[in-house]
Length: 285
Ligand code: SF4
Image (spheres, rainbow, N blue to C red):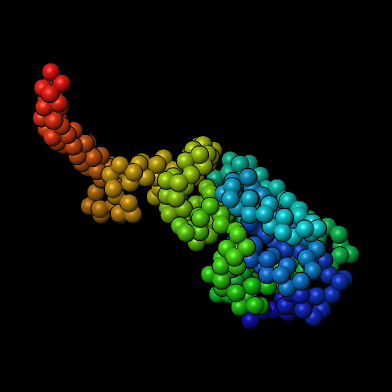
């Protein structure tokens, strides 16, 4: 159930010209689908706010640019949140310490409500199925156009794809996209970055050096790097570490197996290739 401050976007009192309608867009599928849906319905959009930390997947920022091209004439405002500064101060964010999200919300609020005489309606892209997020006590006027229209996350992605938003196909591997270095994306997001976005992975290794906190509870970025290397060369993708072994023992075992297999392949090649070369050499004479 939506509370009183959450009236359907583009309908009734909240649709009035006196209200400054602002879309909170991250550049991910849900907020982009929200913007496209309202635009297609002809709902007036006064402003789009984008909070940028500087560590987003590049395709997320490109999606914002593409959206700006579609919403011609709508004011786009970028709010900068200095992620690196926060990382040095608080360490990697975690479910208990989402300082970066807090800073985003605070900065957006400060910007939006600086004009006391203005009535603002903030539209947030929570999808159907995320009502629990919408039920949090917002002390401001917010609406949730996707929930109001029964649009699920799956449908939101389909809407975006219909409009040519593809995010370099990252949604094929990840359920959410925002910051490539976010520990809340878990090992799976880190794995995708390591295997498919080497440049971003190098950035992440650099950022790790600025944080006093470990990336994930049991995994530093350096340890993940070693694990993903094993996946590259040792075919251990997604396998869990055997319970009776330490990470170091497991790693040593996998790398030793890889070494033995390489030696074996070299020997086999030497055996199977030699007669042919010998024969070719004889014929050449
Ligand atoms: S995606 Fe992660 S790193 Fe980015 S703002 Fe959200 S919690 Fe912070």
